[in-house]
Image (cartoon, rainbow, N blue to C red; front, side, top):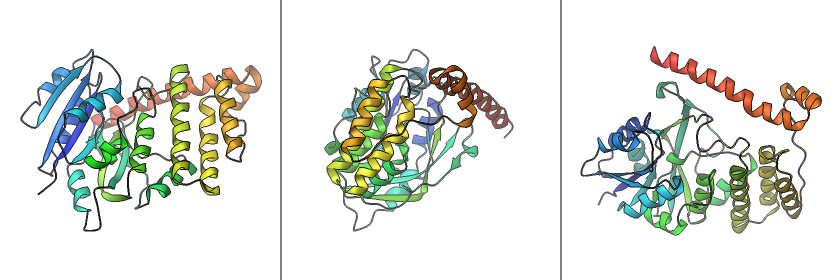
Length: 332
């Protein structure tokens, strides 16, 4: 029998993009799918747009606003599929994404083999997406995947994964305490319950680049900083539960060092905890260096002002880049 794939879409105030996202799910060449959209208390037209797609295999549920992890958990509780495809409400799947991944399974692949895929960033037009391979874009063991992820601070986008129901259930629910990096923490647990990662290069996902209004944006939010640090602590613990070698500890220190800039200098409490954790791992963390273009601000006005400039100025530049990309997309 051909496995049924549940495509699960949490949505909150994504009226601009939700229609295209649902269409990319409906257009899958793999015929055995169910699509479940959970509107997480949107205040725009997200739910109304989603209902236009309602059918026998496209179901829409609503809940009071509780955050993306809770919406994903709700969606999973409603689904019946043998495999789970998570899809954020502003991202797109290539039409043959799921078919290519399932076709990559062979007699050596058990239900605990998880599948990943290529992914590219775009803003408005998927034709302008850029696919940049990383060291995670290959077949790996779960422990090797986590080692590389932490060593080089790499990322695999949420929708790239296709995971059996068995592994999804074993991994447990999404952590509703996490406001940011909930996907990074969740897929660590998926890997803990997996036997192998099969990378399918011809399967593709299109990840829409978020702006500063997106929930994943941290900025100077203390609550989101707390969430980010909690996720980082869990990443370290998960890797060490699989392997506590010198390489694993070094990967954890490198991961902490790369993330330190997110908390410096506003959160000395988190920085102190990170330093203690690095020392337990046999390493130490260096004070993050400002890029040269912000260093003079730090020298003249102090690190806090430089930090704020490093947050605000890229937002202004990013807004201009998005506007230009929108103009270019309108002309083809």
